[in-house]
Amino acid sequence: MTIGMLKNLKRLFAVALFAPALALAAGPMAPLDKAPVSTDPAALQHGAALFVNYCMNCHSASFVRYNKLTEIGLTEDQIRDNLMFTGERVGDLMKIAMRPAESKEWFGAAPPDLTLIARQRSGHTYPGADWLYTYMRQFYRDPERPTGWNNLVFENVGMPHVFWELQGDQVAHFTENGDGTTTATLELVRPGLMSVEEYDKAVADLVSFLVWMGEPGAERRKSIGYIVLLFIAVFTALAYALKKNYWRDIH
Image 1 (cartoon, rainbow, N blue to C red):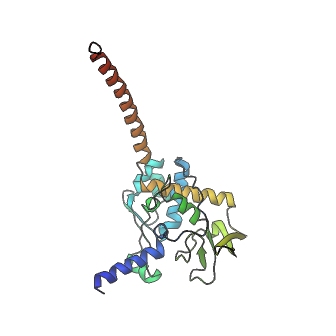
Image 2 (tube, rainbow, N blue to C red):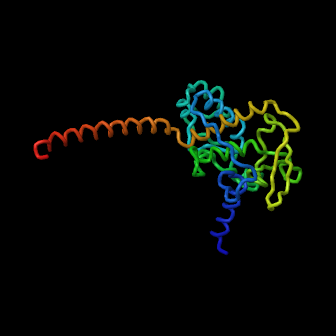
Image 3 (cartoon, rainbow, N blue to C red):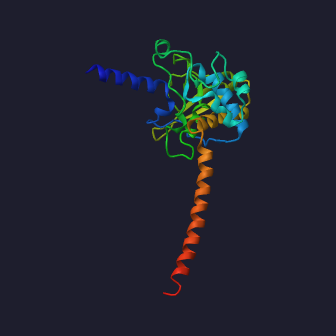
């Protein structure tokens, strides 16, 4: 085996450990719930706050600059005062201070960048959103895992449950079915700081922000698309009327 092949294997191991949206070949034990993705500025701003306070401890979003968040209704002062904590400039990329070499030493693999994570699965209205929404709500206590956590969507996940204080502790109950399949249900044994409804809404806001971050110009692109389609429709009608008038004497 060559050195290049060894490096590729290491990269694959890193992705399998920390990138949930890339480890979907084996279907989830839990069915995917439809993500209530929102484009409401308040939801996106709440999602941005959750991302910065919880996810950016390990994950960066290095394809987006902080000042891009002005497009979801925040001012540069609000971004600087509420979403930046280590002296970055508002025009800097959303990177983390932890170096890849350090994270690899601590975790065994470097956590992936999350800028495009919501776009890494096709087949849904919002690619990857349903998976992410379900994944963040399916953590349960598992003392056999190094982090003490497991997940029904991503079995033996390497990532700990960063929202455990908000959601609380869930335990899993597994039932063997007659056809050889396994049914899993979760029970909330210790409530968190949020109710179930509040936590679901918080996860939905986070997923909405991840969807927005993967393509900030999506809504503008859709608006332009509608204008283009309207122009084509009007132009087609005028062209057809001109054609009828031009060929009137011939037909």
